[in-house]
Amino acid sequence: MVTPKAPNPKIPMREAGSGTEVVAAGSKKAIEKLLAFVRLKDAKESVGEESGKLPLLTNVR
Image (cartoon, rainbow, N blue to C red):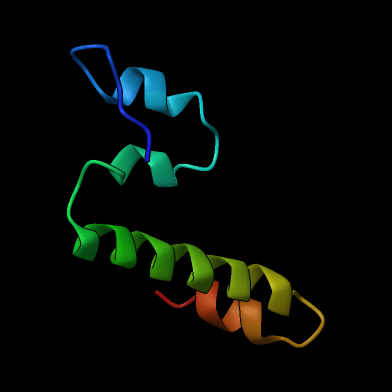
């Protein structure tokens, strides 16, 4: 885990890139929620336009 030395932990952690480090200091549940969201987003992107599932998920209003 990243241990920030600055008073505001989000500033040094933001440079890590993936975004998961931002909640590294948070609870385990928050980290699991973020990882589940990232997996869902990746799954939507990997489905792609060709199957027709992505427009169905993104264009519902």
